[in-house]
Picture 1 (cartoon, rainbow, N blue to C red):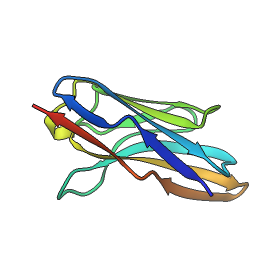
Picture 2: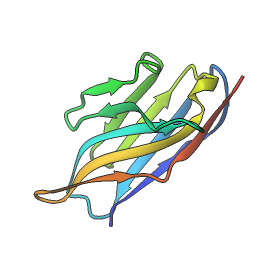
Picture 3: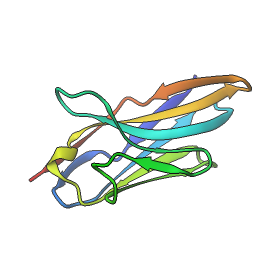
Picture 4: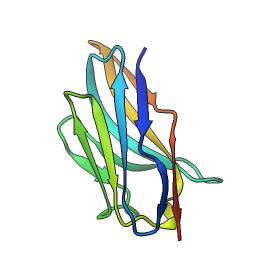
Length: 120
């Protein structure tokens, strides 16, 4: 009954910014870690950024210093601010969340993905 709804993808010129957001809805008891992954054509899905329930963050080396992940626990959302975008950032970006639907019942959920295309 949990859904992750992503928004903010689109076409952007190299060097430009883009903001992705993801909101969890449905039967969410509490949120654990939330993150963003991406998958380019012909490549495996990779971790872009993750943020823990306590606010600690980790980033892929390729995006460190350019991307920033944040969360709003009250709104059950996670945001990925992407700056200085490069053509190699082009991919489908997926929101991910580990959460409890009930005490002691933790599950992993994925959004449907949003396309980010960076032109040179």
